[in-house]
Image 1 (tube, rainbow, N blue to C red):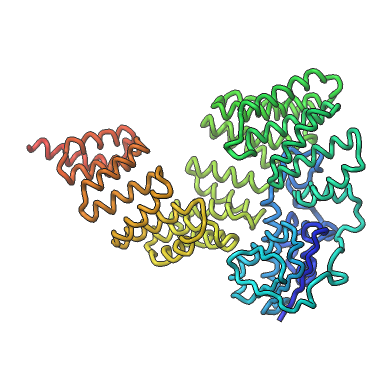
Image 2 (image 1 turned 135 degrees about the vertical axis):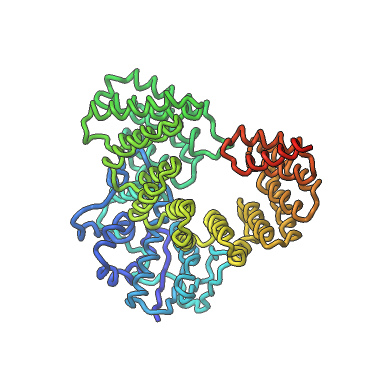
Length: 598
């Protein structure tokens, strides 16, 4: 048996409260294959201080290695989740190697002082405990219970509650100054820490130092999903700051809030565009003051404006800004400066080229991009998606696999590769990836839906039904999709009454979800309710007029009720949309032959 006691302290930094767990796995970790450490270095550095000293080479992307002051791309919370998933995988690895003995008892004290990062870590561990064969047991003191619906035992021995000397108030980074801790937090995307430290630092700062801190805190609040607070900081800088470069950066950041980061109902393309126009005016007015940085600010202002153009559908000019901007930076500053910003521009160039259907050019940009930054996994995944779009599935698989090698904890990479395997009819490999995706996030609706579709296609209806029904009573924005897939299974099992019930539930939640109308039509057709089937099919086609498969279904239904003229009209429309629709061509020939004989 292994027992771990964790005493939470709200004054600690992210991962510090987990030190007892890290200390437990570290001895085994030192015996791990060095390849594992190299591959996971990007994540291990979150909770193993000094690990860089045991490596011969850093395996970091430009995004990960560049100092914060040179950033244009900022980590989201998902990066912290990847590190937490790595910690869980390492724990599991140590159990398999028999370095850590089952059962594992985790006792948590002072739970009311948990950091947000602590809550998210234990939520993941609790979700994944099935992988440990149920041999992890969680105990929590009588503090606030954060894990709803989970079987966590209460610690009844109140004498153990409280701060235990040596386990609370420690610091991984006791030798670092506050400024160094702040830079580390911002660099790793530990925004909860950055806000805590930065708000303290700003009390004793002034002038340009204070304005720079305000700018960074704006980023930290946005990254911590406190977007309105970030907006306040940006606006305060724009109002009070006397330094052009900082004010320009604040206007750029504010524009991105209104163009990208705010919830859809609060976004404003007009206001985002206005911020970029004001920033451009400032850039031109302060050309001499900005000096060598003038071109940099000008190029990135145009990069921001390319997003405005993209949203307006002006893909050509958006593309031109991105392509020319990257070339301008390389020409003026040389090949080794502003590398991160060049890669961002190159990536945006791939997106705008794709919007213009210039796929060959997009692949050229990807080649240069991956040469500059071969360790940024998202670029490999994005190129894989492009290969998948153009039908080059082997190259897509290769890129998705490389992305997974660089980051084995990004669930969406497994989903992308699984979908590609499905297209190639390599169903066992697809299933393996779906299971890994569900291992990382057992209750992820998207993974459950996709995997259930594979099981339905394979005819494993009972397994698919069990998987979906486990989610049917949980709150989810995608519950209507769960109901629709359950209805599909009952339809395949010829349990038409049950299928109709679930399609009705689907439409009650999402009245404009077209597949539910089409599926309902099919169920009613099988029951012999042809008029009702036609009514639902027509409703579906009102929402999605030119879908050739739906039109074909209606043509077949018209044929069944012996309204051949309407059937022929629909089939001709199908073939106008899709000249290669074989079923439509065959049915049209059959009906025209019937008309000729009549």
